[in-house]
Length: 61
Image 1 (tube, rainbow, N blue to C red):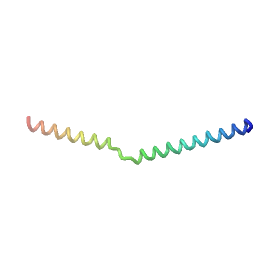
Image 2: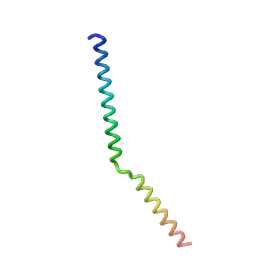
Image 3: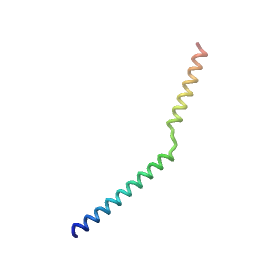
Image 4: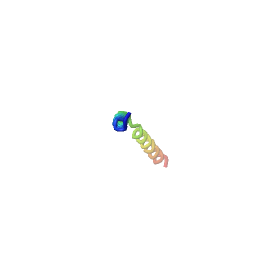
């Protein structure tokens, strides 16, 4: 096989790999967007527990 043909085939393979990588990245971002965010729920629970603790401490003091 001559060099120009090999070069063209390599460029096509690189393009295909790049397109596959972009498609995979888009798919991963879509999955992350669809996943629920438990971090906010956790901090809301911690805040409510702290508020209850402060109220209980104030009632006992």
